Image: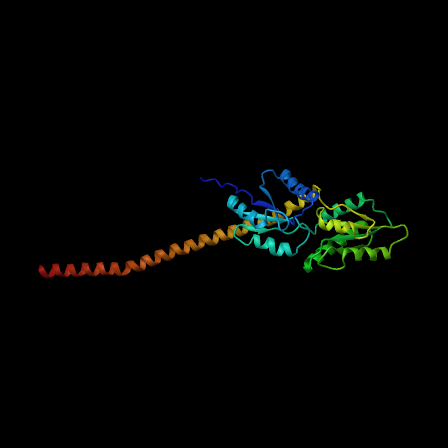
Length: 288
């Protein structure tokens, strides 16, 4: 009786944008450190699409060489150029897959609420949800989903602004919020960014009275990362199993084809032997 061993899980490649900001690098690293604590048996590797190295394609290559399977989890809050080009290109090979980005997710809204509470959000304050932005329409739709969820949680209107790629830009959204501000209220930016860095610095200069901290570090982010990983890993296992089954079926067809060709080749040979035997028999009867 043979025993079946459970295959090792795919390598988790956590891929972020990359930043020159030291605090931002520590914040991103904290997310993957929390993932390692949650699942110490998992091979977790870090990769980037810009600014920092190693590049995501190189990390996937190394992961596949070591473990045959890899799942890239974008440490990004929505789809966009990097998920559709850099990450998609890195996993365009057998054994690799890309997970969905971290947002939208209710747990991210939980973190946003906590950040605003920590920033001292008051009842008369106006809130602007500030995202990095992308020209990809699905990215704006994802941010709008988070904006609507945050508005429900806060029980007030929430505006949205983007750092790049979409409108309105954050300074314009802040100015519009200030124009409608209640007496004694402030304009508060809810930073919908994963970590400190270039875009967060721009939020600090956007004209708001208060800017909340980015989402990381926060232990809830690790749970989101692992959920995205699990969903993609399950799909990857299905792809591998389907590929294996297809390869086995193809091998069976080749073996069947070889057997049929061998049988067809034997037919004239057997017929020839039979004819020869018949002639020999006739010769013996004639001699007799």
